[in-house]
Amino acid sequence: MESTKIFRIFGIDVKLHFSWWIIFLLLSWILSTSFFPEYFPGQTVASYWFMGVMASLLLFVSVLLHELSHSLVAKARKIKVESITLFFFGGVAGITKEDIKPSSEFLMAIAGPIFSLFLSGIFFLIYQLNGSSLWTVITFYLFQLNLTLAIFNLIPGFPLDGGRALRAILYWRYKNLKKATSIASKGGKIFAVVLIVLGMTGLLSGQSSGLWLVILGGFLYFIAGASYEQVVIKEALENIKVKELLNKRIPLIKPNTKFSELIKQYSNSEETIFLVKDSTFSGLLDTKAIARIPAKLQQLTLAKQLAIPLKQIKSVKREDNCYTAFQKLAEEKIEALPVFNNSQLEGFITKKRLMHKLVWQLKFGSSVKIGKSIKNQKMIKMRETASPRHKWRGFKRGGFSTTHF
Image 1 (spheres, one colour):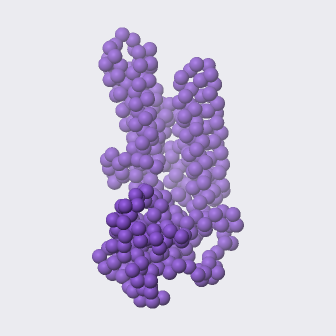
Image 2 (image 1 turned 90 degrees about the vertical axis):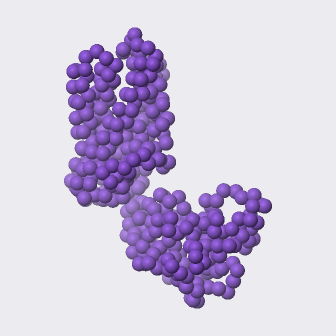
Image 3 (image 1 turned 60 degrees about the horizontal axis):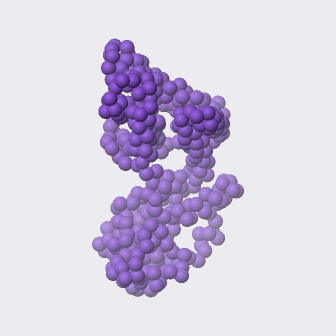
């Protein structure tokens, strides 16, 4: 998800998704050229644009406050919230814990619509007291929007707030998060299809507002499916320890190795990630993340210049579960994460091995175990490119052990 951090409040990072800018410009244009001129005629073009931009910005503030209400309830229930990523008509809270108590999820879910109803009342009161001015139309519009936002979010379809409240009730009833999410997400998909059909009908009848319904319906349908898939993945990986998928056979190369030498040695192998290390530098070189390098530059570029320092990569512990590793790999957009035991680096967990395990878990279930046939299979051992006989056993943050296996 491409997003930009804009500020931090109550210990929560607030981020904007890139799509926000597109919707902001589109909504400002529609309000300034169509909605406000129709319902509040006789104003200048500059006035309409002022109204359109201010209404769009205040709608964004309304959505932010709606999402903050969810997060503050979560924090009050001792649930960690790292961030809020805002789309224009909603947001996603960065809560890594999925199996929240039903009571906590229910309270978190209804907090948003309740606060939107409160904002709707505030804007309606300002509208009634404001008299005749540009702000009268803006506050009336925001009164309608917040009321719509509250009612819309109470629809019992996941991932809407009403759907989350429904999932909480179902989770309490069945004691099964996967089943509860499946039912609630199906409700979300049904509602999304209804929105798409209504939007298409509106477009065919000449109503431009139908486009919004189609876009919103498509977005909800996608998120409903993705939310259920996330729970399925969690169930498949949460009981598997990182140490079970630990990879200690990643090739080791020196930081001053030329990239051309690396290509010559490993272009015919399946290796794509490398540990770049000496007494002063430790980093991970992910060849899949490297842009194309011209042949002449390959002779000049060193491995150290292409590697990401390990201290800049999120790490996992050997006792962490694989779902934690899955989430961090997705956040880092990298092929491997370092695995530490206390301060000692034991190896890496790779995306390739994790996804392989996930496929087997989803297909064959919890009976799939990491057996000796996998653990003991012959693999390429770590070697330094400058010294093929130089093997390693383990290494620490401050130094590197060069003992044999």
